[in-house]
Length: 348
Image (cartoon, rainbow, N blue to C red; front, side):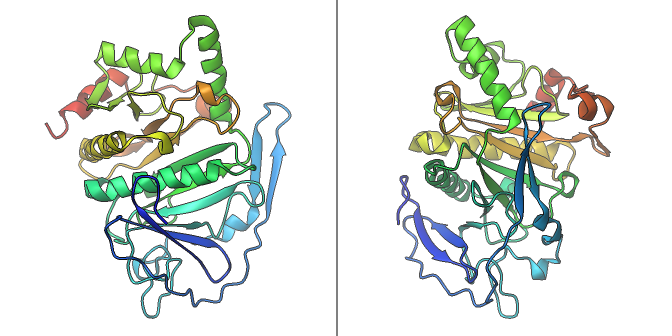
């Protein structure tokens, strides 16, 4: 099938019944999926949701994930294309972008978790993708957002990428994940509460006003083009933190126009290259898409991407210690304006 923006999607199933989709450029040859010959048993995830009575937060217990694959050697990577002697999660000799149900899901029944492989090249990173390949990933995120957001058991679609061992990555192949939460997670609940208060007082959208203020003030902006602006937020929590906002308010990635998707890929690759140039080697980071909730307060949301890194110096990591972990009150060693100025100079 074709996704709304022209990428070709080909659906198949793995030997244990999990779904797998390939995403190829629209002008690529039609893909004929190969059979997964591994004969895997049907997944039996053990997932339990509990609500903390003190905070109202939902805590997920997924005990089966304790046995998930951990930093295998490159020749045994389960996210590479299959080859003789090493059948993988992707039973083909090559692919552009591939998405499959996580073998060790955080949610089962209500909700869903997926793995998004950005490229078949094990030694690549998102930073080094071509703009065309990055754009294909954007179309993939958009298609998954639309499909997962249509499910009755999903409240928020959250595409994200963890990069670097310092972040806790267990597979080094360039990939991200998508969590289709069956509940509204704490961060989004907080954002929607603030957005609702702002709407009641100011009569305008909180996120649009933050973007306008950052663009007007200018000192924390590190890059922009016709449709997007990247900036270090005024009250950044993390040693390195960059937000990317589209200039037009949309609820999700699937609502972005062709031009907006093109411009995002261009600016995002530029920002990632600046992050890697900060200390002269790949920066560990989390890239977190903030999309509007599927149902509750959807009109208050504003799609944006938040990039953060725990590295506070070339050889130092910020750990969440007493104040951050015990009270949720961040104390930062870096000043947002200084970080923005440094990132603007990188590569200039």
